[in-house]
Amino acid sequence: MSAKKFFISALVGTTLAATTVQAKTLVAYFTLTGNTQHAAEIIAQKAGADLYQIELITPYPSDYKEQIALAKKELSEGTLPLIKDLPANLDEYDIIFVGSPVWWGTIATPVRTFLASGALKGKTVIPFVTHGSGGPDKSFTDTKELCKDCKVRTDGWSGYNNLTPGLESWTQKMLEEVQK
Image (cartoon, rainbow, N blue to C red):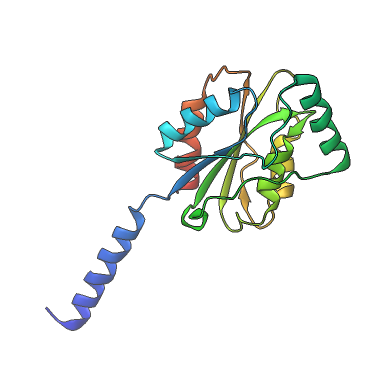
């Protein structure tokens, strides 16, 4: 075989191998009631992804009324609460599903901190939310606004409380579309 034919054959083989490598996926989420965690676990299982729970350095008060008051204050003042360390290997992930409860029509402040950190630059971010009423409202567009220099999908998934209809098929569709 001539050197020219060998080079072309090797190049084609390399290209084919590169296209079969699956992107590494992470599911990052914040939860207070367990609803968003439930959805995150379903997505992680379907996607074969790792899980990362966004946690506050100083947790919210255990009293529900105090939680609501503090969360509402953070949103109205634009405060971003401090969260625990990001995964050390975050740079290894290509696709990151980001889950949040919906608070007053947008994503929770700990998720806002995670997105605004700049650590997701260049990554594909796919938001999903859980809510008690009202739907996702501005959650998906706010995710895009906060996650500068990311490829954010604005066709995220939204579920009522802990109900997850269509979540597995949506996850599969997102993975197929972003890995094209």
